[in-house]
Image (cartoon, rainbow, N blue to C red; front, side, top):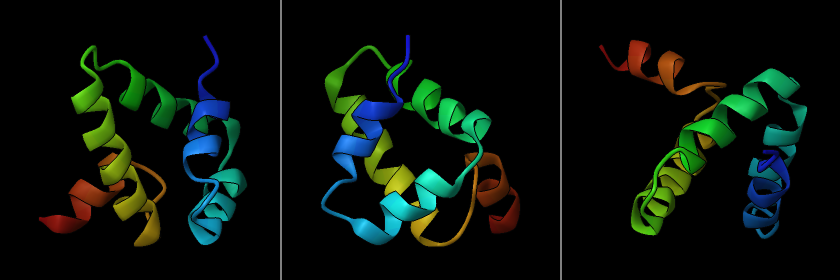
Length: 71
């Protein structure tokens, strides 16, 4: 299941974030897709998409790097 295009479409109106996402390695892109779309409820997926935008906007490649930096 390849949901990367779904993320790219979601980010299409946020050029800087989309460019950063597209510059990530395919593995990081898949990790984000897995994180977002592993949630069953649409509300949770929307929340995770918002979190991803915030984290990528701060220059972090992954949720784990972001969390480690917050400590």
